[in-house]
Length: 262
Image (cartoon, rainbow, N blue to C red; front, top):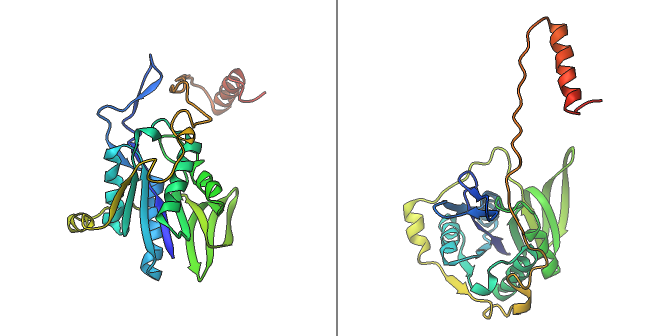
């Protein structure tokens, strides 16, 4: 089988600050990392490669510096890398991004499985993976913790409210992965990074994938972000002394005053 893993370069959200005047993220000086959910999705795909000798292609969309996450994916074991980089992609929302990624996957060729992270930590929409599946006309399984393959059967264990369920589908299928709590991200060794430089790597423009300009960038995006702002900080504290019963009464008074209870 052939697997495509979508990986995204994101700012380290622990370092991001917001410009309160413009309502935009301050990205200058903020380190970029591979989206953690995509890292887990890549690990799941590479595990299948190890078991079944599948081919894995890493795909990303972004500015030229996003090459680093594709290169990292290849260093970890992906066989080939593709970066979509073109000013025509700038400002794309999740719909326009899904459209471009789907066009690239079609250009890559026969694809049996598409792996995506559940969501990106800079947007948290969880829309791109399902959007890619819709654009490709593929079945999709979301919120997966693990995936197994038996012939053309894809068997996924996915998280649901109150527990888990096992879902089966036939390839081709798109899967979005949610990180297992015990997952520890693996990083490549220096020899693996050096070896990845010899693997096939492609940079494609919008024209290369046959994408129509009207569906790309800001003009091709049905949704646009007007402003980003942090939630209001509400810090209140109350100190009191007395018996346990008096303390309980005081806590109830505070909770009623804050409308937590009636």
